[in-house]
Length: 216
Image (tube, rainbow, N blue to C red; front, top):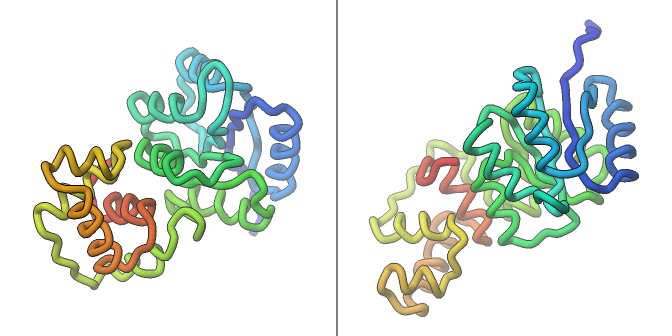
């Protein structure tokens, strides 16, 4: 049964041609409407503070913008509007940036050259289910940790390590914080990757979020 109801989206991106093309693509899906476009995080936040909208279904947020970038905007949203669902958009697949965006509340992370089919699937998943992570972001995690019946016992120091790994600290800084050698930290990392059946630090972060070791 068809309905005239459309989900409301906002695009925050400083590249005009990209944001215009993205709007046309979204509208072509037929189920969504782009109600606003902003060129940076500051004007977007100003809009939220002035209007306090409560009917936004999804924000598409560029990571790299002038004035106020995606990460700073994401941190503000986490503190002030945690109800808003965000998919981060970027030309970079840098692990550090992905982790920062996810741990600050982004529900998905897509590269800007993502196919329209995957892009549509991502929007639908975030709007309906609350999150979407491609294989790029999740590594081999999703297929492994979705089995909720699988019980994994973690030692106290492993949990502490995981919590630190979800921050912006390097492995060397984690070793210093835990008063352990970098070699020991490498051992923790490899052991956890094997135990949790993941391959990247991003997978470790997603595992921690899913199992409420850290909260975003």
